[in-house]
Length: 78
Image (cartoon, rainbow, N blue to C red; front, side, top):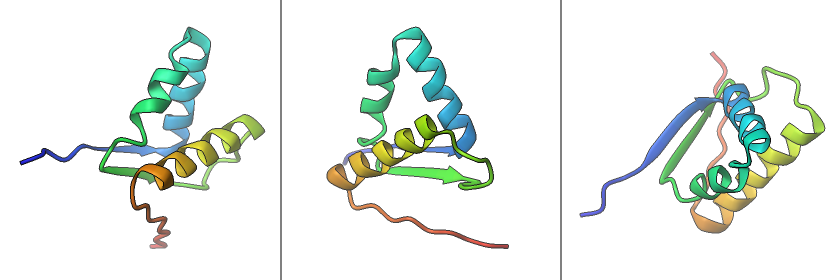
């Protein structure tokens, strides 16, 4: 039986990781792992204003996951 893979991250922290990977040359490798996750939870989505680069990164993540897996975007307001 295949073991499921998942990651949960505050959206602004994930985007910070992507910025750091862009600086150290690991961006492509980091981006390649995200579509393969069975479940990716981005918490506090939309609480921090996105730079144009961050908005593009988020778009790429969502698009790549859509191509690889069934994707669901949900907003929960407490």
